Length: 435
Ligand code: COA
Image (cartoon, rainbow, N blue to C red; front, side):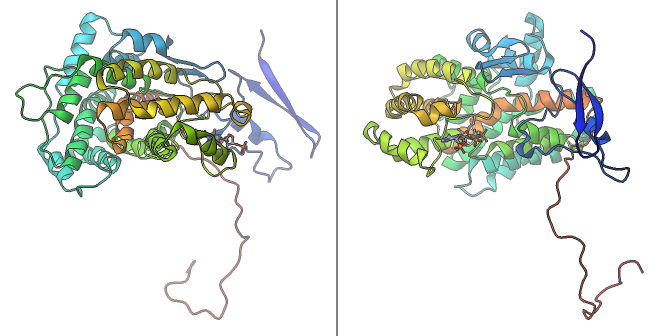
């Protein structure tokens, strides 16, 4: 097939323009040639919230929202969740292929040997109030790591990037666990390098006086699966923040802190915490119809439902439902599950949700599992941030390698007032402009 071209006719001038089509897109800059006259700036696109704008070329994650497909580096999420450990998936997301036996050994060793926090960072955490939200503590502590590793600012050096990527992936569970211990007033537990990634995280969360913490293997595997499901999700709000901040060549700790800040909002990573609050508010299966009516009247949103990209069942929600069953066999059934299942059933049969293609997303069931495992709702977004760090860093590394990328800087349509002037009688305070 020859070159595909879009021909645009400007009815203001009667002129026609050509814009090549590549991968189903035209270059926004090709629209600049469309001008009313030589003085004209040229046409721009207006796309608040990036509903129809590709901001990069990426080979990491593929989503087909209409068909409910999610793949990392080509592998379906269901297969990765079934057959891989989280660190294997992290390697895949970062490097593009699954590790061989020796590569995996080396990778796991590397991550395990960077889990400790500098003692000053630990002290920094101690300064937070006892009731500080864990996400605020996480964001600030990740940003503070920038002061511990000043060499991280050399972001154009691939070896240096690699080092910071390992550090961030290794230290995220440690920071997360410390925010949790801090809120309970418990002493921090040092990482145990004998343990796997999620078992060590559980050790840092829940070890008390026993000499060696032994995680329940079903729960540590469930956490590993949840981490796999959350590792990346292409150009979502927090990844976009990572890329936008990273595009200024800020160091990866500061960029990751910015991404984590974006994740904290209730419309993004904060949604599973909101789901639990919503289930508490509903209280019983009998109150669901009343709540659904309030949602339809625009009073609330059904948290954990709807997605910018998925207009079908979120494939991660299916794996999570299965994982929930495994977890509940160990922890006992979370009473909220019955409300959630009934809510899902009623919503999926309701015209309002069918028409708008609103299905459960990854957050609908994850909070229920986390709560059954013993996490407080304010830790849920932190649990999302740990694995998503892998995606943020893979996307950041891809950005750094991409010769087409520049500092991220959108345009605007100015809607303010035209030029106006200060009253002539107003006295001058400083040196007048232009003198
Ligand atoms: N409950 C009720 N109605 C919802 C809804 C929800 N969870 N999500 C979207 N809608 C409705 C909107 O009100 C809108 O209705 P309208 O056409 O009558 O105005 C329509 O569905 C389209 O929604 P819109 O807000 O344009 O979708 P979006 O792509 O901008 O938003 C989300 C996507 C995820 C932000 C949104 O679905 C949401 O807020 N969900 C709840 C929070 C959540 O679970 N977030 C986690 C995402 S993984």
